[in-house]
Length: 445
Image 1 (cartoon, rainbow, N blue to C red):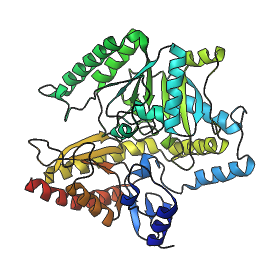
Image 2: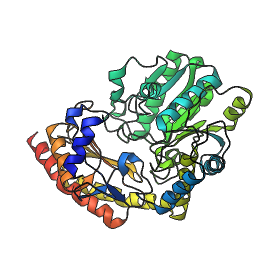
Image 3: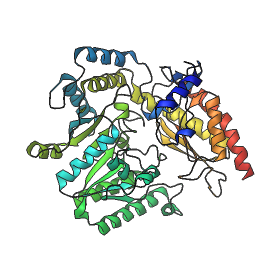
Image 4: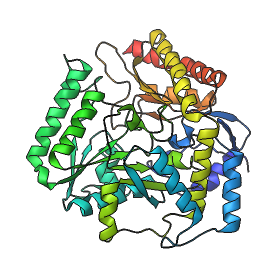
């Protein structure tokens, strides 16, 4: 099939997410290798978003493919009550790399059901009901996870679960809390506001605070040490569990094993994983819990379960992925490549007036585009369809062979961890050309 036929047949008998089906105008994809993929007409694309921020080790890694093939041939499925070798080995490996005190893992099929599991465990462990989350966060598309994420994609399905309490975000570029304050002062004001929210809700009613280890698809909006130390202190003061969502920011994406590693004083009670755990080669998610929570469920039933929990093929893929991260030194490489990427994006900002902000770390970075740097008016409004300027920019990127996420007024820059310097420069060059389009709209505004 060529591209047109492939798209036509996909649209005829399948549905896609987050869009009206008539508006779906997808790329096709028939082959992928390294940081590239090819459409059905043979056009090559630079995968600037690692697909859905998950193909961390790049496409078609032979070590992972061989591990999957070997596991399918040996044991393709075991129900979750059976002990298997890949389950044991991957659990041991995760205990080695996750923050201290996290010892045992419950395996799921992906990130959303891992978030669901973490919230269930927190509520069962504490006997409390409420979970505090951020407005600008995405934790998955199942009903509870969607409620937990403040991302506006939740709105169409509301009311959601009734026990989610949302707080505001550490967003120095736009939050009123940060106006006239340094980033550290703004972080402290936000922590004080969170503390007030806990008082309003009753700390004795709150099971957990759920935060992304490093903000992802909501805009790479991240607090500093003052914010994180303050949240940790509030959790300890009130006996509230701290759940860290590393689904997107885990496994080297930020230049550390996990985003929360950038804040050494923070000690999560649970770590939620997916995406880079298998780099998307097969589905797998995980919740890694503290010794205290683990001991509780030694004596009490864990009231949750999944048909595909601890799937042996998924666990085998996870083992092979962790081996690739180590043998190819991808965590360090992501840190180094992130510095090159950030320098390139800052250079673009200096030359393009449509760039209002550059933020992120490692290979989790973005450009936020504005009609005016002085007013900071976004080039496309929050929670609205893409504006004409952003549509034109997205079309330019696609025409030039760069595939990434353009959301609201943001361009995400999250390539696979294996990307090299020439490939990074190719991506920045394509962005440079596309930003000239945004500049023309900003100048008109």
